[in-house]
Length: 333
Image (tube, rainbow, N blue to C red):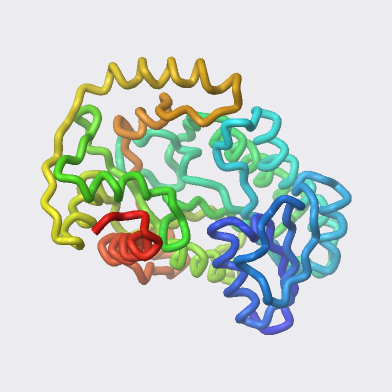
């Protein structure tokens, strides 16, 4: 994007949003960002950003934020907050998309909406790897409402001639995020426990690669009105991740597999007790199911159509993230 381009970022204070917003500011774009009043703006302190405060599904907020925008990176998400209801997910994922798309369709200067979804819309991949045409099978409210927003946007865009690109990221990771911290901590111990006998394929995308791919997709002609799965060139197994981390710190680990059925029962009990109280269960069905499902994707469209290739391999990215965790004092040497 050329300097002076007007860009709106939703979810700018999240992990991916912070990285993308910094890159846009560094490129000389005129960046506007939507953030809730409770959001922490510290990671973006001192940058030339025009903030619009309020909920992403507030019509007045969106109307103000969309004035004069050429591009929108719609990253905002309600990421599996135990206090979220289905309607909360729907407000953040679907309602906000409808409002943004509606305002964009009435703007003469608008160029493209980059809508960030998730590979989770495909659910468990029974026949890996899956590409962008693989059947949908969302497994929770987060994934269901992400899919609902995608499908609504696609129909609306055709009817109103709205330029868009849908990005489905694999599992986002990298320095600055703690999503994989538990796996890394387990990899530092002599024994690494896995549930069940599945392959546990997992597809990662480094946040630096993801945000670069989003920037390419925003202006590339071939990305117009297309959907792209963005991820590393290859998936990795969960025990493969553990071995990479352990080897990086010169640790020896032994993989121990446990029966998965009892953990499903414990997870259901924990959810039954914790959910009504708005508490995060220490173990829950979806976390247990993580070990029984494969999430491997074909990123050929990303390479062959978008012409994008990640800079970070699984090994390099995991080692970089491990070093960052160590610097924060979250891993014991």
